[in-house]
Length: 135
Image (spheres, one colour):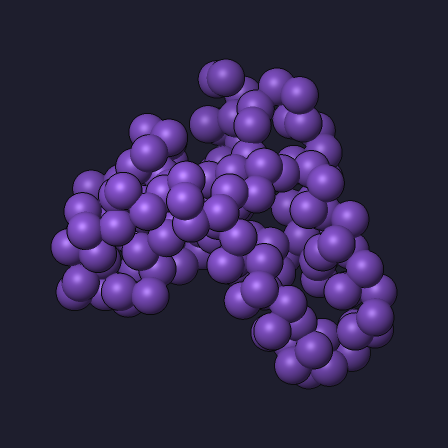
């Protein structure tokens, strides 16, 4: 389960994309549909700040979409109430990510501390390969 900030890393960097490519076919990576919209909204600002070509970053995120399973709200909507309760004290807007993780019973790959304490396992990019190797 990937958070929007991981999508940004895939579009703007190398390591995240390479990790997903390395484990493609071994592990399924899921992303709620809204995460792509969020990442695409933030790419121009972040790319400009880092001196990265915005068009290339946008093209990378489109290419990255082929490596993951994008799920729409109908897939995770039944877990909205449970996810919203778990995210209430942090960032309630992150409920789709929490809901998808609950439906799939899987951890969230994120750099966002808003998921910590939600009762859902989280992994950061620094350590996610430890989890991926076990699959």
